[in-house]
Length: 258
Length: 255
Image (cartoon, rainbow over all chains, first blue to last red):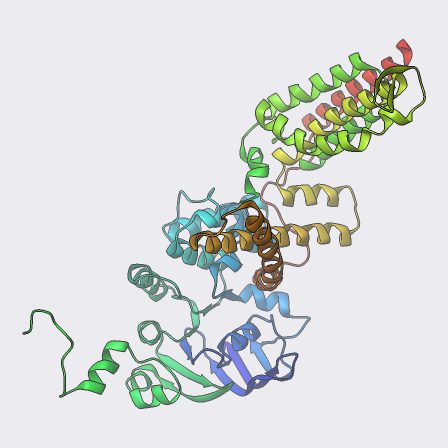
């Protein structure tokens, strides 16, 4: 079966000539759940922007659902790949949540009545029923994340691409979002440096470092390799690091242990 | 600071918000042109048009306090710009203020300019209070304005939003550090905040634009509240036009 996303030897340089990504080749099958891991500046966001056609390949190619991503196919590609940005404030810009969520279907040419019905449905699915008339800046951080997700789910994309979906979320918001994404059927591509989220959501990890793929493989195997992760500037949970570095010498301070 | 409150009456069900935005826009133009065409000193006719605007505001459920507040800002500029006619238009002196002489003809022109402006601004305030920006742009599009104009308006709206939002963020950060002691310091800060916000909002605007493109934006702001021009709204616009025309024409006939 042909992959849903096929990236071949993709390279991109910023306008000042700095290479952002170089020689990236990657296949994503329909139904795959892939985490793109890497430290800040590794090229994760640049790679994601190519999947939605917001950046077009300077060299190499990106194919989505059998369509090579070009200026001509970009609108069709965007209807199949839903991209959720890192900062929900960038994604929510209309006066009310309902208008924001209906924005995508309206752009696809759906009638206002259908777009509104879809938006109501998605907001209800994500537990945001009753917030339709609210302005985005009146929502909590967790609600904004869900609302940003709603703006993409409403267009029923085949692939969900999420850029740092759990950034600025508290533990409860993070758990809720992860549960919600676990229940979705779409193909999932998640860029994150939150390793716990990568483990919970994705069966496969691709590690980017300095714009190149350092390695890729099974999540369970890669995420247990602490020295490899540290080598690529990926954060092992702080508790684990402290425990590893101090094993056998000290235990965490406890005021009751005297 | 936020500007979402500007069109908050657009979300209230009323006979005015039920009409398509293009009809609301044309109605505003009709009232404004009618007011501008009134002869000098047609006070009674100006009052009729002002009453008409008041009636429309009532139908649109825009409170009188909001109307007065929103008209008063731009009206201050009209007053400022028109003050010169009090002294510059030749006529019979009415009173002297030092070396300056206010003439009857100057007073007539000044009063007429203010009267016309009150009517036109009142109509404009009702339009922007009851019509969201995307709807306003779609009305311009329906009037066959060049796409480059409507697209520029749409982009300006988005940039305005990001600018206001950035100013809010920077202001909050500044307030959290106890800034603002003294009017001079506050003025200096306001300039700094505006400059920083402008720079930041360009970057933010770029990110928001990408998010819009990612959801299929192709140069035109779509709207959920699209309404087709129907017979009722055409009848309403026709009645308004006839009333304004009759008022203006009768003002000339009575002279």
